[in-house]
Image (cartoon, rainbow, N blue to C red; front, side, top):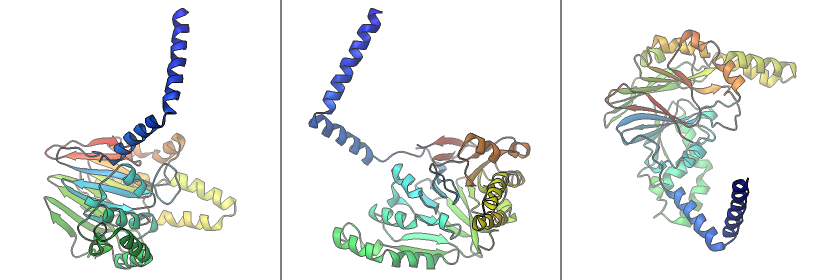
Length: 353
């Protein structure tokens, strides 16, 4: 009992001392400086060994979820860095993780829906401020040139104000803005350099046409991103023997439940939208079957429709998948990191907080 009494007294004294120290301005300044210094350090998110990696910076569809951003994948192959789609909230993740955005080689847009493009202006500014050496390359389907022209016009005053304030030594005008590159179906290889090849292909997301998927091949390792699509032969063919297949999917049981509640409550607009989205996103079970057909090493579900916000919702979301594909699949979340070391068959999963 005496020991507990003395321990209690010591804890009270330590607490009082700590509180007193925190009231001293010099201590506050010291701790604040250390905290800020930590924020300036670049985080080593990726493996130091040579690898092809994909970091999920956004895993949800337009359905709201406070713990997830809209669709975004950061891909690193050797020293090359690409962003595949850049939906709302994804820039917050990239900045929270202290990604050196000035080193982004290009943005690849699967299509021009808002949940895949909303944070493009933020990425444009951050990579410009980060010291990129040229305009931000943006690959995408026909219409990408209209998109970036619109963003440039919308942000033209902002650009002018920032250059006037900070000077061209900090923000050079010749590297401001975008370089749109329309992906041509007859020229599927859009990047081939430093042992990295990126191949684009069309997918089925009607009435959104064209919509694209992208395959990354780097020193014998491979990842494919389906974009938004129904089951598509182009996905199966391009994913043949892929190490990791990222595929969007819709959980029909959950959508049917939400749709029925919307209809019963008289929300005709939401009811119509929930009917429509079932015609251009593939269901979870068929996606698992597609991964089997492609003999994909691992299946990663992303662009989750809707993203599960509870353990019960996740149980409903994944119901039946194991019956088709009993292993080697996961639901992604913001921060899911997939690493494929070169010269091995390893597929390493981690989570970035």
